[in-house]
Image (cartoon, rainbow, N blue to C red):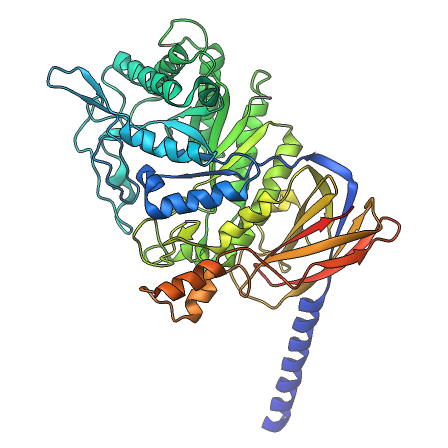
Length: 565
């Protein structure tokens, strides 16, 4: 073969490959939804958020983001934060916060100061939100190991540096019980009995790892005394735990089972009676991204396995099968404050990858709960905002410097989905078992949907997701809805992609300024809002059927909202 012939064959092969690639991209995925095939309630399990740094709550950008979260949800949003009892001056820092709620005078008598705790909870209550009130961490004056106490961790440092005196058991369990009693008593006086009765209280965070420097029995004892103080102040208050790390890890499963069994049949350390109050059960679930050939590769499988095993354990006890479950942290990985500069595998956080992952993973959470018949109440997205940090630094946050990131728009979409969830048949949606086993790494992207219907309304969230964070051209998605009780329906399409609802792409087009002008900030704020594609369309419904086709880029998310008379 001469060189000319070789080049000709190579060119022909390249054209064939491109042709096959184009055909693959243009192959239409199908989604079929029957409005009569209800599968459960479209419960707002997504309307739960949390973060390490409680003092951000009442700061400028924190208040702004909370107002956006409150506005997007038709039901109260729940907030979970660490460090509500941590000793300090209220200075905010990465993975740190304090309220100075408890100190002692020179004679060792308790001194209670609720000013900063009130500043946090007041912010929630004024916005119609609910504290998912975390009882923790240990005040310095009560810690069995009070020094060192304040840590100064920063991204890139050893993560174990954060575990200081706040992580230890109390040196006096009666003072610990009295602290919780005084806190709840104060809350009832400030917000009213009815309001505080509507909250869930939970004890500590990830006690099966270094967040708890005591033994398992010491944790149960600390829990019992906290519950005793809570119920002494408000007998109708709701409490639970244990917020273990890694629902499918050996230490997590062992701890969760032991905790449930202690609450059901163990001897209560505070009262001497059998059992301890248990109104909500919580555990954590995390994915595991890596860097592969210069791009991020997500791994949803570990997160789904954590959820499956946690659900299974709760369902295995007849006494707990119907108790509400909160996945106290449910995220693509484990460190919100680890930016992409120090952790390159976290580079998914600014763009649409985080959006499509969130859509695809929450749909599977509903399916897992359905399959195991548990009372799934909430999944906390451990992501909020970080004050006075570089723009788009790659933290796991919902906004940067007061500008909403693309992922927040997925929650705006969820906020429009109400009523009953509907069964979805999708030609390119990977089965739940496959996602649990190996994530979403096949040759085809995961094009799936979550659908709901309410009175004279239906909503369909569609995503085009893959674990590999690679951009690709849009793929046609043909959507058919059957059993619509109308002759016409008006459809509005919202979308998150590189051209819509995406402040990050807008910022990059500006040249990625770290000191944007007021005019640029305003443009970024507008780009961060949820945007529509085109204008509302009035479509014909024939024999109860409505057909429409959209084009959705890889890692894009769309919401179709249909209304009829």
